[in-house]
Structure formats: structure tokens, C-alpha cells
Length: 382
Image (cartoon, rainbow, N blue to C red):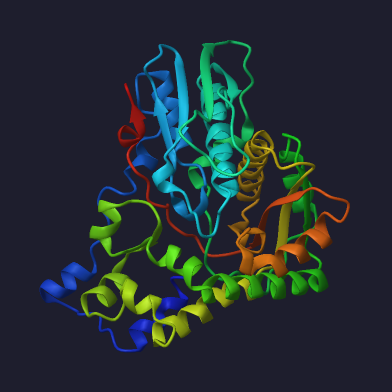
């Protein structure tokens, strides 16, 4: 669940006080010190593999779990594994969304290598894979080769500016239909891109995505999976720079005064829970367009390709100044989501196939980076 920071101000109004001075006031204004450093360190390593990986770890991924591990024991090569401790068994029981996130990672690695003058030759699942779960087998083996003919990707320029914008969007500004054409052109790995900015269709998608959000939050085991990943305050974000970030002066104050905690957020009778739902619904209700990817099959290789296209579509949206937030709750395969899942597939894949991703778009405020683990913590056998 993605709680809007602007909307979460309700907690301050409900009782938390922002102190103007003293130790409390100083603590309340502190921000994470290390969680955002990987954004500024991208591309600064001597080893070309590390340079490419330092960009790749900025890729979007579900619940910001950052489930990648890179083995560098072979000269000139990278073997990518999934960290099975970072899966989402409740909301992503077959690891489909995690695999898409790994596809985003691999595409950004390829783009970064090309920017550096290297060709990235990838072999996916060299020891095979399972359709039901990711395991200890490698996701990909990547060989970097210096190649003066490698083509740089213009979308790479937008990597530092890419965000998942989880704030309400401006309902007075509608994206032009032409933006969909630009995003469609970016999807070049076999996914079928679709989207709409038609007000009547957007209204239908708002209602469907709102209902899917309600189901995910009101299903105890799926909501608890998100709550367990709340990182509240700068100390928690620096200690575990993944999951769902609640940092900044407002959340520091709420945390220090006991107004906001994982226990409070998990209680459906609490004011925090009720107002938090209002915040989540505000995102669904201010969508000014929706985009999606559909694939003909649902193999692991296809999920990786869908991730590559998803990253590219996200970067194309960034290039056009659009806010972009994945809104794929209705695509999750846990039993309680069966109704919205069927509705989405009836609309977007009536002849068969899998709807891999769905997002809302619109014009929103500028937002900051997401926390990231340092690259060194993701390297095996360097």
C-alpha cells in the first residue's frame, strides 16, 4: 500500500505537534543520511560491471524490495540471483511481480552498459526456472563486452529523474492523447502497450483500482505484508533502506509522539487506518489516465521482457513530465483479488494473455528519490 505523504498530514492535525525548538524539534527535522546515497553514486565505480550495476539498482521494483544479488566471481560477467528473503508471498504468491522488477533491473543494466560503451549479452535462467516460484537458481548471466558500435539509449538520460509518484495528481490537467503514443513507442520487448486518457474510461478505471486497493488493505494477510515493510522515521529508513518509506519532518514528529507506528497502522479501528484509506483512495481518484502492458504468455522469460518494457514506459512518461505510479493491485493473484483480476483480463485480454502491469498517470508534484541499499550490500563473491 502506498500512503500519500500529503494526505497523511491528517495525523498531525489529529494530535502530533511539530515542535519549534529544542531536541525534539531538531530530531523531527532530520532526514535519512545514507538511504539516498546510491542515487548520487551511480556510475562512479572503476569496474564496468559495478558501474552498470550501480545504475541498475535504481530500477523500480514491487514494494521497493530490491530483490537482486549479483555474483562477480567470473571476470567480465555478472550472474544475477534473486534474494528469496525479499519475496512477497502474500500479494505476489507466484513471484510474477518480483520477476517483472528483475526485468526492470536487467534493462537498466543493459542501458547503463551501453552508455558506457559495453554490450550486455544476457542468458536468462541458464539453469531453468519454475512457473510457481523463484528459487536459488540464477535469473540471468550477463557478459559485458566493449563494443564501439553499441547504441546508446536516449531514455537513459531520464533515469536520475524517474520516480514512482505516489501523490494525488492535478485533476485540472489531462494528459494529451499523444503522450500514449510516445509511451507505446518505448515498449520494444514484445509487450502490448495500451492506455487511455478518455475521461469516461478513466472514471471506470478509477473505480476498479479503488476497489482493488480496498481488497488488498482489508485482507489481513496482504495488508500486514505491507505494514511489516513500513520504515518509519530516518533511523529506520537508514537501517533498512527498502520497503515503504515514511521519513521527513512530519513522520519524525508522528513517530516521536506515538501517533504513528506499525501497530497503529495495522489496527482497522484506528483513526490512522481510516484516514490512511482516504489517502490511498485519493491517489486512485485523481488518476488522469491509465496505462498497461499485456503479454501473450506468462513465462518467466516473458515476465522479464515485460519488466524491461515497464521500465522503458516509465522513463518515457518521465521524459514527458508525467507522474507515474504502478497501480497493479487488481493483477495480484491471491484468492481474494479474483474478482478485479477477472474484470481487468476481460477488458484488456479478452482473447487470452496476461495483463502484467497497470499504472495511473497524471501531473503531480515533484517527489524525492526512493531509498536504496548500497551496491556493495548486493554483491556476492566480488
